[in-house]
Image 1 (tube, rainbow over the protein chains, first blue to last red):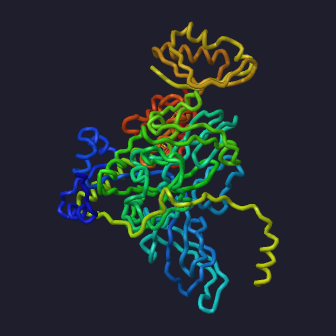
Image 2: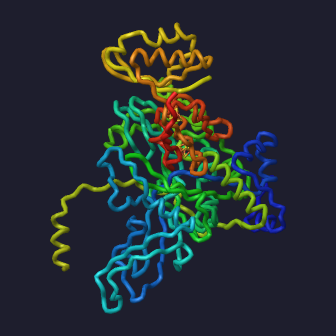
Image 3: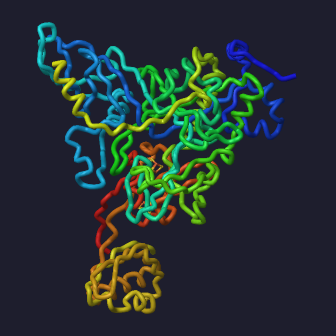
Length: 411
Length: 140
Ligand code: SF4
Ligand code: SF4
């Protein structure tokens, strides 16, 4: 008879301090020792983790009102612009925002020493942040400029809302050109001098729940050292792709949109990054618990590095210009060993995502659940699955003339 | 004793078998850490010299008598553990395994004694945890 557990049964065990929780690495050993059926019966929760650069992250902040009031039209935090077109004193600071007056790539490759990701890190670290805002002045909001200092404790709300995190699979990047290139996948040496990758493999959340069976809208998670939730599917969520027999996508697939209160997060798990020649971003720590509802879930979580394949993509011509060369796939196990074979050539691998940190996140989440601090949630709605007819759209190339006159007429 | 120095050669000196003579005359162990030197061009060598103290001194004197400029290696690389997020990117750029990943744990460590200050790792660290430190050493 196949064994089944409900969310409520698992939470009941968590409350009694009896839940059996293992990490997505540990589950592999349990299965090797006891087999799938027995492991599914014994294990209640498997914890996952990932810590790497995640563009498409950011924070909504409500600053509180100045005296006299201002309708902030443009907003800067430590000289990095935050989007102010939301309401009078609400703004959104994006991880990838470049600082005002940054030399960018004028001296190529640019260093991007400070940007949105760094502002978020400094905020969480409780540091003082310079807030500048300007406006045109209205009857209700007469103030035209503020220049002050704030900390996270001073603002009304600050919540992280990341439109796209936890990519399920990602390209392994190489450079087929004959010059070094500087990308969001790091420095890529010419003539396939290295191969960069960014995932935590067998620890990565969506590799352990390839069909989004237990990860859905409302799932409670570890986010940036605090508690967060899955808010929606992420942008560019594209689940109907080529998958292996184990359900694991062979190319970029699902993504998650995540939300959580920044005030209870930890700077250790939100770290500003500077990508040479590319720009600033943020390393985000994400950990998702997976309830072992039945043997199928257990089998998913037992996925190993050797069963995970990444597509190799050229970032000289392939990615930027769409002139793709078929370079095949590499396994995560080989990537992690430090060398992979691509088209008969042995290539050194360059990780971007931190495996030791991913492992720590899975362990922290495990400890939270064991300490009865964290219960699991059943998704309130599912994410679009592998059979949903989602196209991966590109930007249309059209003449804007007609639209321009339409906008004019409206004025 | 063991020390790292930078040897600056003029175009004329770079033609001569100076390192050969240095080893032969002084019995020093010479480990070339970095070289940018071509015949008929000026250039430099970063070398580690190892041997008895008097051999070392004789070697430096020999080089100086030939007109080679000998300067202490004045840069070191400092790895800020507290800024490092253990991504491992730097290790794949390090030619000497000074920055290396222990493959079971995937943990990155820095062994200063293996660092030849080539600077390769400085560019690729996204947390800017690896920094060049300029150190003014006393002339040997
Ligand atoms: S400076 Fe060069 S040798 Fe030293 S740690 Fe960096 S890459 Fe390695
Ligand atoms: S690249 Fe920087 S952050 Fe990454 S492991 Fe090396 S020193 Fe640490």
